[in-house]
Image (cartoon, rainbow, N blue to C red; front, side):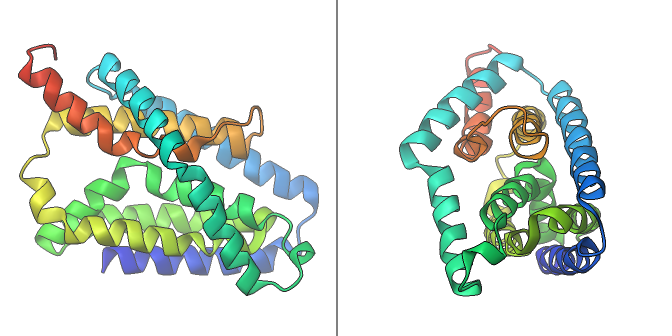
Length: 233
């Protein structure tokens, strides 16, 4: 239920943003995106500060990034965006920012630890307080992003639904091995991904293939376990 609410609020926020967006000039839209970019950057820094072991985070980021490059994760997400765009719009010129909106919002909505923690809570207890908070945040973010980036933001709800839905179904098994150090280091990696997303897509300072670092979210907890077993934590 938590993931369903999350997806619905993204859709509602995106639809509202596209409606309001037609009434806003480019300066206002750019200010909205810049504001979200600055907030995302600050949130990423805060999350990284919660990391338990910076070396674990660095190793997780590098290994996960290399794995993502090998698997071509960002290309897979981008190709998914292209396929959806082809089915939604016969004229690509009508949605010039479709893929950017799809990529940016998809990574933004799944890269934080709230997605994983919320899915675990929802799967184990049936409650969804964490996902409800995340849903409200995502809804407002989708509103702001879609006012500039359009329909692609709405379709990120599909990625969120599948990603968090799978994690919820696996929550019982995952919860038996997740520890506080693992969650802390996961928060650190998630924070760095948010920083990269802010720099690359929202503030447009430097192009970074942030999508290829998504495997880091799964690699880092394993490295944390290894460090704990070797008494290096």
